[in-house]
Image (tube, rainbow, N blue to C red):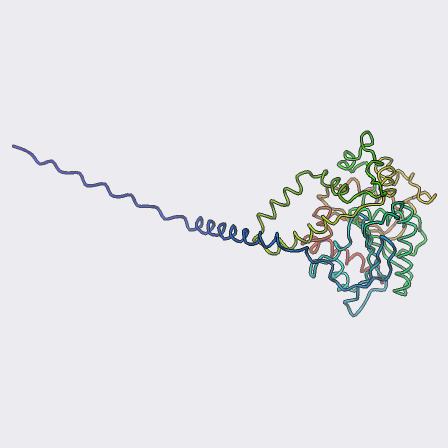
Length: 371
């Protein structure tokens, strides 16, 4: 007799798990961004140079490489003491005036300051012999005099950025009797021996400053840019990768285009001035040592007695804190303040960090000393 064996039930078909909702959302977001990056990347490559420096201004003086701007007021009440901003000779001054809402100049105007800016253009071959003496005993004094005439006020506050700060310090030390009311220095080197990266780049054992000067007596912008790139060899690659990751972000791209234009428009330098900065400041550290002579006069920072504000950046790879801090011990000012703020050499002055941190501090400090 046969027995009927029970048949096993067919195994149930596996149920497919539903994708995690968060994962799906993230995947869609990345796909959307990738599409936007592709579209915006094409637009970016086809776009012209970023528009910068649109705050209304007038040229009140021009001499060779120098232009002096006066910005039109934007407040009903103006502080009595005008401001003169001094830019480093390697860069255009529109870093102070990138765009509406991203402009230090605009911020100062709306706060009620009377703003003047010294800007530079590429030196002509006949200006190849420009020296520290020309910048600190001719250009700056001439601009101060023109600011006095234009504003009708004797006192002038000077704000210097990086090497513009160095030129302002030399001017202040050689003109201790005025007419300077206040002095502000952004990321300004004093002890050049602490600029480790630049010291390595310009080591006198292998750096021939004379060979850096072209046949026309000018140091090319490409050489200057190459020197800065050597300080951070991966900087441009990293910046490009960050741009790609953020191409979908219109505000990030706008900021990048403005900063990139400023960086690529680095200026050439007069050969004589370049060699002086290398030999006297980098090699001899003469400003810090008190041995620097300009126009036959010794530059003694101890002669500076005006109110002083020194602003340094926490993450500055060009002018580290140890390089800028000695200024506080060198000057004889009784009213002096040093403030360290988050940011780098450029973001301290321009960009979202500057808007929130440095600009309000500058206004607060100057406002009490500009009446």
